Image 1 (cartoon, rainbow, N blue to C red):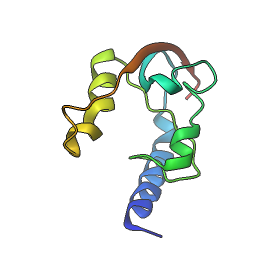
Image 2 (spheres, rainbow, N blue to C red):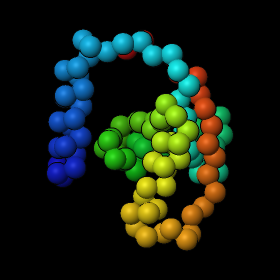
Image 3 (cartoon, rainbow, N blue to C red):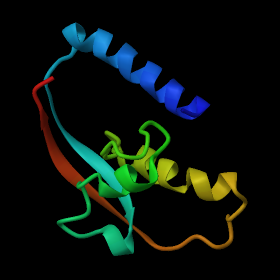
Image 4 (tube, rainbow, N blue to C red):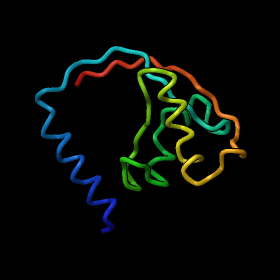
Length: 104
C-alpha cells in the first residue's frame, strides 16, 4: 500500500469515529464536471473517482466531490490544472446543483 492510501484509510477511520456527531443535511450541493461527464448517469455516479482514485478516495472506492457553494466547486475543479501548470489550456466544464438529502 502506498503512503496516500494509508492517509486516506486513516482519514476514513477518523470520519467513522465522528459518526455519532453526524447530522442530517438537506442542502443544494454543487459539482463541476467535464462536459463529457455532465449527464444524468455520470454526474453523481462516483465511477470516475472509483476508477482513478481521488484526493480523498483510493481507486475502487466511489466518491462524489461536491461543495455547498458554487464558488468552492469551481475552484476545486480547477486546482489540479493550476497545480500542474495548465492555466492556459483549461477545458470547458459544467457546473450544476443537486439537491442533497443525507440522513447522517
